[in-house]
Image 1 (spheres, rainbow, N blue to C red):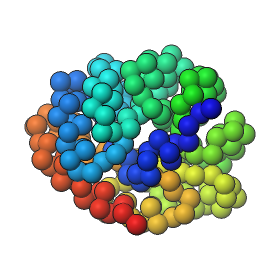
Image 2 (image 1 turned 30 degrees about the vertical axis):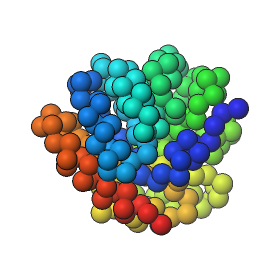
Image 3 (image 1 turned 90 degrees about the vertical axis):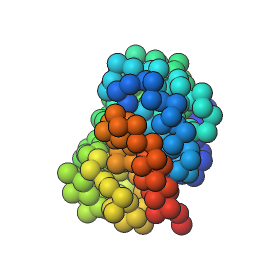
Image 4 (image 1 turned 30 degrees about the horizontal axis):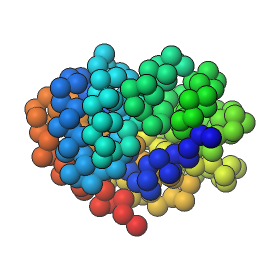
Length: 209
């Protein structure tokens, strides 16, 4: 039985989206996120060391860590083997969804149109990633898409910052919001873990009921 994403996230409503060029920073990154109150994180499969980052952060124990930018079923397998507890994709791919079902991990495909949302719902999913949220029109687009599909839940991601977070979370169709502003590659390159902790704490506070 595939777990529900909301249960995996443990009720967390802000999802740090991480692109980590150097796996050696993963442990300190996990510590900074947890110190800021984060309970989950998404590690994107955009870097050669993404699997090692996943392994390190999953081993920390304080975070429910998932894999993002998963484009193929083979990547989904590797991500889950590395410790991913959920899988996020920028678009809807039947093979990725099917493989995640077999692996019994929640999968969150990206949608940008009503047609893609209908395909995801037809596949038995109820949670999708609106991507890229802000370039698509932000909350206006999310509300237009959610209106005909009241059972759908969204994880909007893409171009959202701390100042837009509360507005998204105020919409009842939004399960959680993904964002990369809390821990950027520049933060990691500079070793600025205190700023990562501060930005994470601010986001967690903004996401509180």
